[in-house]
Structures are given as structure tokens and as C-alpha cells.
Image (cartoon, rainbow, N blue to C red; front, side):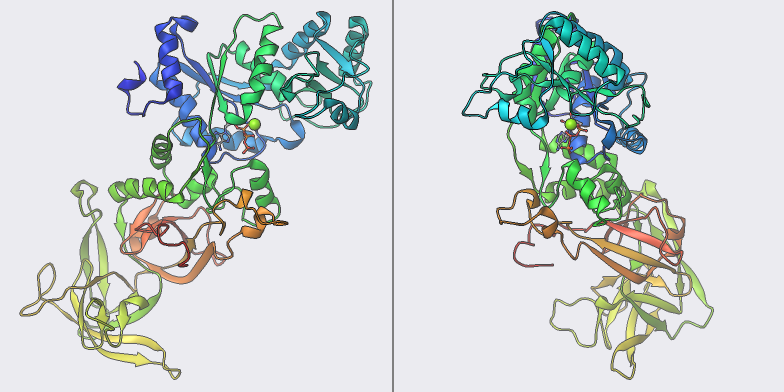
Length: 566
Ligand code: ATP
Ligand code: MG
């Protein structure tokens, strides 16, 4: 199948693949890989790469390998390995048997390094980090050759074997490629291929190695060993491509994948670098990697985002070579579109105000039938108890209507309770401080599914039975940062954490949700009618009660936030 026959929009990478297939390159096969480093949780930027790599493989009947790029053991761990697998699966992709670690290839990588030394293309260098930096030159000046560059092959070989055996201290020696210290491309100025790291336990290889290969050396060889055809990576690796090719051109390996770069996803009001996300977690700015404000897949799942919405988002933003920053509104509109069609409707009162229906006897109750989705009968219906004591939202009542547009309840006025009857407010009860604490109302028993006689009631409000409603805590999330690009603000002396939004989490502790929500499944969003989309959190509140997270508001509130606040 060519990409034009799938629903995924085509892009320049798919065009390259189409041309390769036409030309019979790689025997017409397509093999990609997703190569995360297990040093953090996956974020929405990774989802872009996952959708691209797995999506291309799926559409061209190829395969996509999951490969952990685990060459940096002191930052990596098994929790991250497991979370990455869970998140890729949750997004709806499967790698089957194709599950690898770069560390699977440590022995082979070592043998290829020996091969490079033997043909005079790599040498052991004793310069320390400081000296290497000094000798490297800069974009204007060529580098200078290391005094160890002309070591004999035998001497480098002997030292390299002893580096592996653990004879030398961290930082005292490295293995370098012998390329060109005058190259205009800094990556080609005799880059480091191997470094010594004692005393770290690798999550896969334990204490077997004290010699670890660098990413730029490991990646092309891992790709080639797995028979990858198209090695898709982000633009910052464009300058590394000559090194990728150099490595494969100088060792005895047949396969030579093509590296193709595309632009990273940046999302406004977010940071996406794992180093910065790690800092937010480690320094307690957020609750953890799965904090619902985080742009991580785990955070978004807990917040109520669905795999469909994230995949739709990746389709909408597309794959290009130009760097840009995507507006949060694009992501929100993807989740809103999905949930508008697929989420069931429920009722919840966020700011409860008690209503007593005086013409309904104590203990008298009626089961209302409520449709789970207004446009989709197949979603069925549920029962909601209508009782003498109810809650409505404080914002749905005013003693006096401020203007004609106010369609909600006022003293002496009428309003329809959603899925139930029309009620009239007969009396307002206040406490000593003058605060409204209760409304005394009456209901019109002839108005179930019918208009009242002789008068029009336009407003419809949501409600929850005070007797059967379930107390809940509701968490309202806002953007995590108050600056659209917290990473790259031009203000001097400011760090990205200075732009954290102090109001990114607002907690409402005294809410009521309709009884059916006690059975909710964590992470599965419903629409709280007139309020937004919400899902049950994975954890209980401090007092053991239900917690709901706001996934997204009903309408785009991002368009108007600039300068206006919310
Ligand atoms: P970070 O800069 O967040 O640490 P990384 O590139 O070091 O990201 P990896 O675990 O190495 O993280 O990424 C795995 C794959 O995901 C890589 O191929 C990388 O190019 C891709 N990727 C990472 N971030 C993004 C992004 N923001 N947009 C698109 N692809 C990304
Ligand atoms: Mg990386």
C-alpha cells in the first residue's frame, strides 16, 4: 500500500519512501525503529515520533522496532523502560518480537571498535575533557590534533583492551574516531566513541562493562544490525548525519540505513526536554511524571486524554522540516472532538447550593431516565434519583436577573432541571452573614418531558440529588507555564521554572457528582454537562473520596486568554 491509500496525511518522508519503493531500494522493504533513551517518561513530542515510525511501518506493511537507546546507565532505569513500553502500547502500537536494547550490541560494538583501531580509524586518547575542549577549536577556528593521535595501532589496541578490563579511571582515556580536526563540522573533529564509567550498575548488563559507547557511534550500528531502512530522527541530528554515515562506511557491515531528519514538536506553554521535565519532578514542582499537567503520555492519560486524540493530533501537526511551536488549542481541539462524539454525559455540581423541593415529601423520590449521549442512542441511558433535597451550582442562581440574557434561576423565577422537571424558586434562605445557603423551591409535576402550561421556561441547569449524590474533589487544570515559550524567553537571569503558572491547579473539595459516577473507571472521561470533560483520577483524595480531573473545558478558552486572564 502506498501512503496515498491511508488516512494518514502524506509528508516528505513518505514521499522519500514511495520513491525508494519504486526504485526497488532495500528490496522494497520498510523497517523503522523508535529509539527512546530510558531516562524519563515519554512525552507528547515522543508521540509524534512514535506515530511516524510505527505509522509508516504499518502503512507500508513493514515493521517498527522498539529499541532502548541505553548507553548512559547513570541516568537510566527500569521504571523508565517499563513506562515507555506501557505508553507505546497504550497509544495503540505493537512491536511484537522486535524489542531490543542498544546494550544487546555492546559486544558487537566493541568488536567494530577494535576493527576501526586496526585500520587506523580510531585511537585511544589520554587528553582530559578540558584539553579535548581546548583542542577542538570552534566554528571559526579549526581544531588541533591530539598528541595521542599518532599512537601506533598496537598501542591503541592494547590500551583499549585494558580500558575494557577496568585498568583506567573514569575520564583518563577515551577512544576517538580519527577523522578530521579541521572539519567545518564539529561532530567530525575526532569524536569520542567510548568512555570509561566505573561503579554504575546498568539496568540490563549489570556490572559487566565499565566501557560505554557514545550515542553517535552506537546508533548507526544498532540501526544497521537491525536492518533498519529509514532511520527517522529530529533535526538536531542533521549535523550528525556525516558521522552516522562515516561509522557505517568504515566498518564491515552491509546494511546502511538512510537517516532522515524532521522537526521536533514544541508545544506552547510547555517544556518538552526530558532534562527539564526531570527537574520539575525531582524538585517537586509537580506531583510526578504522571501529574495531569505534565505533557507526558502518562500525565495526559491520567488527565483523560485518549489515544485517538493524541494520534489525531500527530496527524494534524504533520511532519515537516520547519521548527515551530504548536498552539495548545490544537491539542485541545483534538481531545474535544473525540470526547464530544464519544464521551458519555453525566451531571456534577462543582459549587453546590442546596435546593429543597417543598412540594415533594420527605423520603419521596423518583427515578429520572437520562440519555448517556444526546446524539447517540446506542450509548443507552441511566437512572438519576430526583429527591426533595438537591444541589444546583451557585453560579446558576441570582436573586435578581442582571439582564435579559440571564436564563438561569432567580427569586420567583423558573428553570428546568436537566433530565427532570421545571422548578420555581419561592424563597431564599441566608445565614447571619447574608450568604445564601439554601433555596426553597417547588416543582411542576406536569413538566417532565413537556413544556409548562401557558409560560415559557428557557433555562436548563444541571443538578445532583443531595441524598444520593456522591461527594467528590474536582481538580481544574490550567497551563503549567504562564509564558508561551518558557524555555526560550529572552528575559535575562530567568530560568524556565520562573514561568510556572501559580494557578495551574485549582482544587474544589466540596463537589457532588451523580451516583452513577461512583462506578467510574479511572482515566475514562465523561462530559459533566455544561462544565467540561472530566475523568476519575487514579488516586483517591486525602480523605479517601473520589477525585475527578478536568480533561478539557467545553469550549476553547485559549483563544481569548491573552491579556485577559481567566
Ligand atoms: P529530550 O530532548 O526530551 O530528552 P530525546 O531526543 O533525548 O528527547 P529520546 O528518548 O532520545 O529523547 O527520544 C526518542 C525519539 O523520540 C528520538 O528519535 C527523538 O528524536 C524523538 N523525539 C524526542 N523528542 C521529540 C519531539 N519533541 N518531537 C519529535 N520527536 C521527538
Ligand atoms: Mg536522545
